[in-house]
Length: 261
Figure 1 (tube, rainbow, N blue to C red):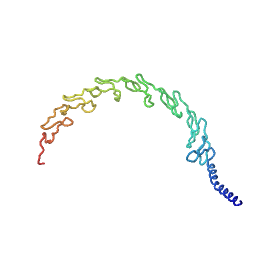
Figure 2: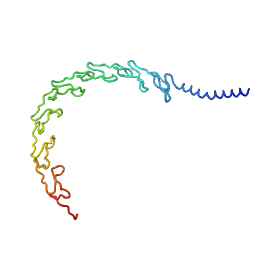
Figure 3: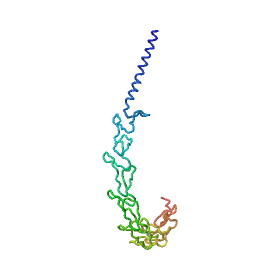
Figure 4: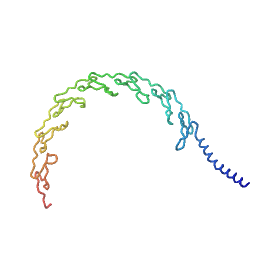
C-alpha cells in the first residue's frame, strides 16, 4: 500500500514539473505584450490599440492638436489635420479662403479660384474676357480664347483676315486660315498650284504640290512620257522602266544575257 502511494505521488510530481515550463512560457508570452496593445490573431506579435503608437517595446498615446484626427499610422505624428485646416508647425490652423475661392483637395488644406477668376498672390481676381472671346478654364496663360473667326491681338479678339481661295481653320498657328485645295500660301496669299498636263495634285503643303501620272516622269515643271524600249516595262513607281526577264539593261536598251557569262 505504501509503495502504491509513493508511485502515485511521484507521478503527480513529475506531471506538475513537466507542466511548469508551459505555464511559465504562457505567462512570459502575456507579459511581452505591453499596455494598450493587442496580440495579433495570426503570425504572432502585437499591435498598439487605436490612439497609441509603437515606441520601442511600448505603446504611447498619440498627442494631437486641436482640429486633428488619428491617422492610424505607426509612422509620423499619427494624426492629420481635419478638412479645412492645414498643418502649421505642430498645429492645425484654419485655411483662410479668399473671396471667389474654394477648398480644392481631398485633404481640404488648399484652395483654388472659382471659374472666371485667377490667383494673384493670396487673392482671386476676375479674368477679363474680351468681346468675341470665351473662358478656357485654364489657370495658365490668359485664361481665355477667341471665338472661331477671330484671333487674339493684345488683349482683344480681332477678325481673321481670310484671303481669297482660303478658309477658316482651327489649328493654323496665328494665321487662322488655310488655303483651299489646289492653292498654297505665298506671302500671306493663296496662289494656285501650277499642275502640268499629265500631272495631279498631291495635297501636300511642301514640295511642288503635284506628281506625274503613271507612265510619265517629271522634267522640270512638266510631265513627259516614259519611252519604253523593246522588251521593257514600267517599274513600280511608274516613272522609269526595267527590262523583262531574262533581258538585261544596257544603256537605253534591253539585251539578251551573254550565254558565255
